[in-house]
Length: 497
Ligand code: HEM
Image (cartoon, rainbow, N blue to C red):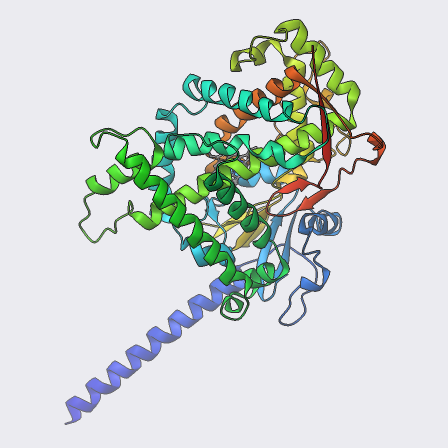
């Protein structure tokens, strides 16, 4: 009996000591974390009362003046760290790419992507899906000749549509027709007429999603995820995603019946093949399955169309606003290529001014001012120590507008990308695609699209404000949705003879 009670005592003592040690070690860990300074949070709401929900980037820029380039802000009770300025971004995303390389949570999106796909995933799922996506897009000719041909062909369709307005004013929305067809080509192996009802429905759904995910209810759901059960917006978003997925599946069925089973010619066919081939064992989970495919398709649609379309809308607005710059673009194209032959990707070597203008459009347009990251491990940075899983906001906009890097950060100025001899000049602080571990998967495709669509349109047209609108009235403040688009505008296109 005595032996029994002694054993029980020893067991209890041992358990108590283990629990105590664990508690002490977690306490020590907690105490040793050191977040950078930031504004004092209020209970429950944190710093939400000082945050401009429509333009958080502006709030962050202002806070950086007080707290420096690495500071803490509270979203509700959650601590978030913000990186501001080219130096801090480079140090974190390039030099400490691994530590800062996880995707941060966006509960409104996680509610439908469920950690699948490339943009909003992490861990093994992200690593394998990203590697696969990059390799398939390269095999399909991303950034190379096969895609170049498709972009040139699409520019002709876009130019025909612009021509059909016969110099009368039309909406900026027209420019959003071309980039999706390049992405659809990769996904489904076909292009759509701009008047095709399925094409129009897909663009409308994407547009709705881009707007809905940045409404105030969506922003609040990102801070207080429980709201997804209460508010309508997260539910509407899921419904729209379901509608998109129904269309994707129909298009896939259609595409499948047209192709030979043993070879793949599109991203989705390659995905399906991988799904069939994938063998899982040793407790590993399957990565290539339908949910991941649909999520990855959505990522390519969102990443590959909204961004490029918004940039083209900026391009034309800026050309109307700065006719002198437009004139120089016209002159360079006319001198080097003429008005007949299509500009090609190789021409960028001989069109330094056009290349500089395209870069400056991206810098000034600042279409994706930030995108959430999180720390993959406990991280030491600039004398602070932040725990694994901390949400990080790299403010790309702050590199694009960094006063130490650009001569006139707030003025559209293609000279930022030209040397004294008029040759194209690369700039490290050019950050629109981010850098490091999570750098944009479609960067080379986007660069090619922007250059070819831009020069292809400018070769054929002069863009100007509608009669009665002065260039001084053209508004350059963005409509801050998921991407920063220009405010609605109309434009007239006069053919160049
Ligand atoms: C002007 C055009 C574009 C811009 C400005 C842009 C910008 C960005 C940025 C800033 C990120 C976030 C990087 C980060 O979290 O650090 C990103 C990620 C991504 N982009 Fe793009 N992008 C563009 C075009 C494209 C295109 C054409 C595609 C695909 C065909 C694409 C696919 C992706 C994907 C899949 C990711 C997620 C990468 C990851 O999390 O690992 N993007 N892009």
